[in-house]
Image (cartoon, rainbow, N blue to C red; front, top):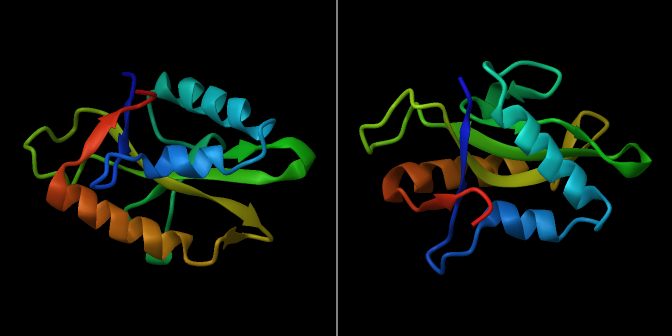
Length: 133
């Protein structure tokens, strides 16, 4: 059972995930993309590659990537369990953005809140594109 990834996009059709990725140091970008391709083939969401967030992040998941210089990159997304398009349980993951984890805290500090809002926007609008397009 493989996962199909999508990217949530703004009204102007810009991917929030891609904007975050492109803001990172160039050496980190291919490592993050390689991890996403790796987890696409996994059968379950499980550590250490990815994990569901708890607390205020409930309903979000993170893909765990160790980058250069011991930086922890965290693409953030959600699955399709709350989508309103009637296609639940189809193994879809929607990338909403990302963060860097330092000392068990996300940078920027509002990363969870921002991505929760994006998840709600995704559910309401169904605005997404296929991963990598």
